[in-house]
Amino acid sequence: NYDDIIERSCQAWNEILSEDGFIKNLCSREWSFLV
Image 1 (tube, helix red, strand yellow):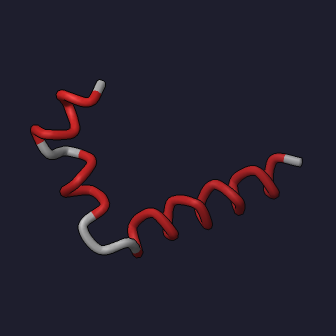
Image 2 (image 1 turned 90 degrees about the vertical axis):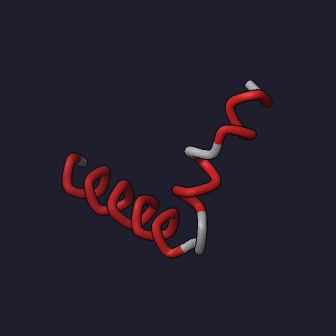
């Protein structure tokens, strides 16, 4: 149901944010060359 989707999405987002440097690595210039 909707509440389960929201709960799991929030859990996934919080896991991503808990990884040190994840956002920095995602936005780094070197990453853009891999795509």
